[in-house]
Length: 200
Figure (cartoon, helix red, strand yellow):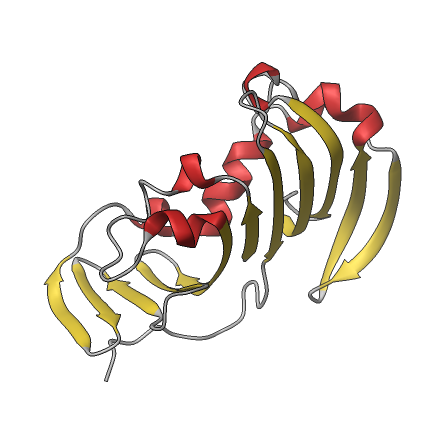
């Protein structure tokens, strides 16, 4: 998953304050984040995250009730796992943010495609249908004026889960600050045979 954010300092500066030796406001001014990982049912997950302006990648591995955390020279684990596996699956978290009312959306274009080796149904949504998204985002009043919006979804024919998602939004928030946000999400190697092991 890749995410690019501009002009959203007030939203992300506080959450970035935990990164040692970094100015959270400077990081949030133009933030690029890349998250990758793997999940093996029922209780194994690996997550790696890199943030623009931060030298070291953060890696977290959870296997059952054990967890390992690595960042640069810092290595912790095994320790007692914190949180549920479902709370660490970024693809699931992002999708749940959209899926609750996704059935009410109207696709401006539809077609069948094979994406990431999965037979998928493509659904494109543009700015003309943005008002339908108000329930997904909890209303649009707090988002200010939206100048650009697009959402592209590729949903697996078998199961309807997100194979790929692309989202782009730009505008001016309620304080007059211009902002841009871009999200790219891909789910790959679904149902492939692989394992997650503790860090060496």
